Image 1 (tube, rainbow, N blue to C red):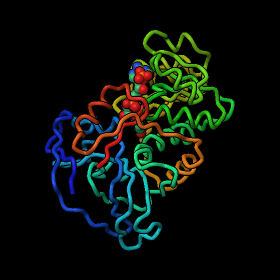
Image 2 (cartoon, protein in one colour):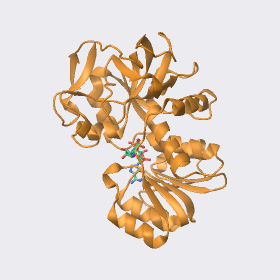
Image 3 (cartoon, rainbow, N blue to C red):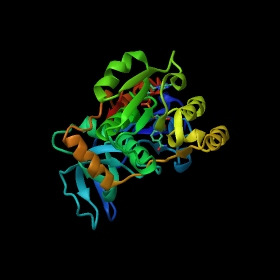
Image 4 (cartoon, rainbow, N blue to C red):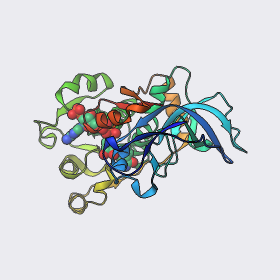
Length: 313
Ligand SMILES: NC(=O)c1ccc[n+]([C@@H]2O[C@H](COP(=O)([O-])OP(=O)(O)OC[C@H]3O[C@@H](n4cnc5c(N)ncnc54)[C@H](OP(=O)(O)O)[C@@H]3O)[C@@H](O)[C@H]2O)c1
């Protein structure tokens, strides 16, 4: 099979397309023909030797988001059968080898893809849907009637978080470039802020929850709009336990949580049911064949993707 392999960490042009043996599933595992592999910022961070690079040995195969068709099942794996279409966040943060034509996944981390969902959309879904779900419901315990500020609301995690917050009947404020404001309105955002020329902290009334996809200065300023007792869930792990953010949160009487997404087949089933009913729509901005993996990474690294980028191995 073909795989996009990294002989060393580096820029997007470091990938090589190589021929490697098709792996075999062990107990509890599935061999999946990969139909689509979603790309996330953690992929390019890891490619550059940061992100989750500590979990990899070289040569490495990146990618954690997988949608595909089951080809073979390991001993004791009986939730699915060969031919079933499944999707999930595989082995994160350990290597999952998604940028390849076949991959081994854990049965317990995967769920069935609804019949009305295409492979590219399914491949784009796992990491961002699990992240938004964990952030809003497990950490922030978002309730109807609350007010939430979602940064990078048109991005991968953001566009999912907006839809979950809309389904929960909250008041949503989203930050994005002006050209994305019409899209945010369609998704259910009540107030859009152009982060290029508007200071959100001077323009909005206090909120109960902030979803911070940026960290640094944005995280610090976000504490100014939280109600006392409110919570900010912060995503970029490079800012984890930022002392300036912790000190300001303490002074203001608000909470900050840095989360790290986890695979979950059960959660993917809940996501699948929302996707099947149309209550959660994943936007694929661009898809690339495996040989164009460099272009796919470069597209995501512009940091202005609307929704998601996927690889089609
Ligand atoms: N800890 C975890 O478990 C976890 C999980 C998932 C993601 N993350 C991290 O969360 C971050 C976001 O991930 P993602 O997949 O949503 O990224 P993404 O899709 O690449 O984000 C792109 C979006 O960011 C927006 N943006 C750029 N600069 C901005 C700014 N200064 N203020 C507000 N929005 C801005 C862009 O909006 P415009 O195009 O409208 O300008 C674009 O829509 C990444 O650092 C990622 O690694 C962490």
